[in-house]
Length: 212
Image (tube, rainbow, N blue to C red; front, side, top):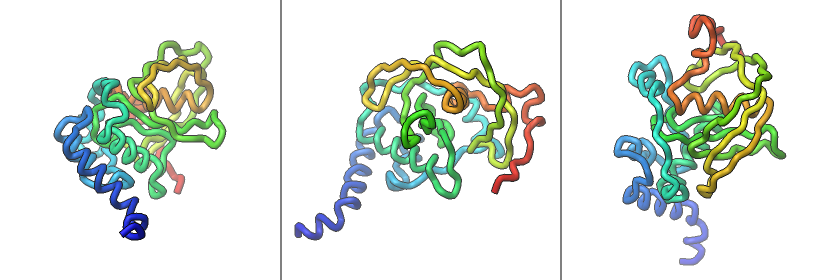
C-alpha cells in the first residue's frame, strides 16, 4: 500500500486539488471556475485571441481585483499553476501572461524576471504602475492573444510597481529595462488594453511575425 501511494502521489495530489477546487471557487466566478477546473493543474489553458469575436470582446474588459483572502487558496493555486503552464507551454511560449488571456477576469499576471538570476516566472496580484520614467524606448512586441503579428511600441524604460506577492503581501519596487516593458504590456491586458493601441495606426501598423 505504501509503495502504491509513493508511485501515485502526484496523481493523488492533483485529484485532491481538483476536488477541493470544485468545492471552493477561490475568487473565480462560475464560468471561470469551469474553465480552470476542466483539466489538470499542470495542463495549459486555451488562449483567448482577438480573431475570435467573443474572445476579443472579453480581452477589452477591465478586470476585477483579487481579494487578498483568496490568495493561496486551493482553487487560486490551481489556477495559478494552469496559468504558468500556459505561458511556459513549449508549443507556444511567452515571457508574460495575464489572467484575461485565458478567460479569467482577475487582475493577476505572470512575468518572467529577466532582471533576476535564473530568469524566474513570478506571480503578481493587483499590480499598479505608480510612476513611469520620462525616459522611453521603442521595441518590437508580440502577444499570445494576437498570434502571428508584431509591432513597435514605445514604453517607459523604468516603472515603480505596487502589487501583492504570492503570499498576499504588499510590495513596491522599481523595475527597469525589458522586464519593465513586459510588466507594462501585461498590466495593459488587465485594463482591457492591447499593445497595438499604443501604435498610431493601430492594428494596421502590425507586421507579420516571420519567427518560426
